[in-house]
Image 1: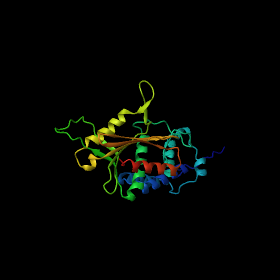
Image 2: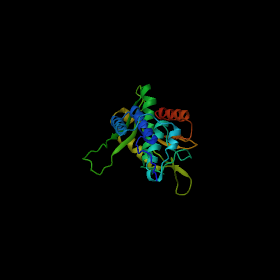
Image 3: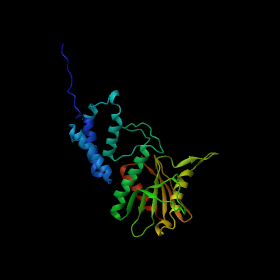
Image 4: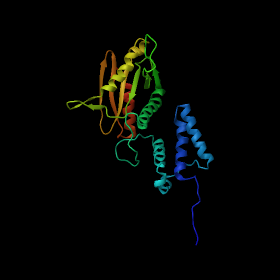
Length: 263
């Protein structure tokens, strides 16, 4: 009796695909920590014998993910997103994800980072100053209690030529909530949050005194954009249709971000 077996190797198409994605992201990300992490992981795979050449789709199709290595599905899916520079939606597609928690899940952070990365790529080259994760300080007259919540903005935009500062808050959820007696309304908690960001910084300088807010949500096959000026601060409520083409999403995102500073 003869037994045949395949040589055990870690240099599989899926691992080469992931290493290639890590190499790509190490060149694209702006965060030094994220860049270092991507390079470190790619180097670890290289030392284990994983090649750096991205496999074709035919090779990936032959490398079937079995039930004993189902955890690799997320790893492969994230690598695909890196190559396609795509965001997940609720529409049917070729890549399946476990439904994330909308408010605090990784997919909300992915949407936030995608908008931040787009703003840096699209706006910084025309003179905008783009920052992410800016910590705002409460203007307290006495020592603040330890339990006082932190205020951290998703994105802070400063246009060129002294334009109006914009606080961008991203949410990976519907922009509307349901009224108690029927109908839809903008979600009050999100409005209170952006309102607190804006009003709490008044008195620091003119840019904060005149700052605008932008609540940005994803949408599928539709759009919404309205504006209200609350105690001198323009606040835009907008969605970006992720079901559109890459060119359409880019155009819509650029327009929303740039126009949010206009009074």
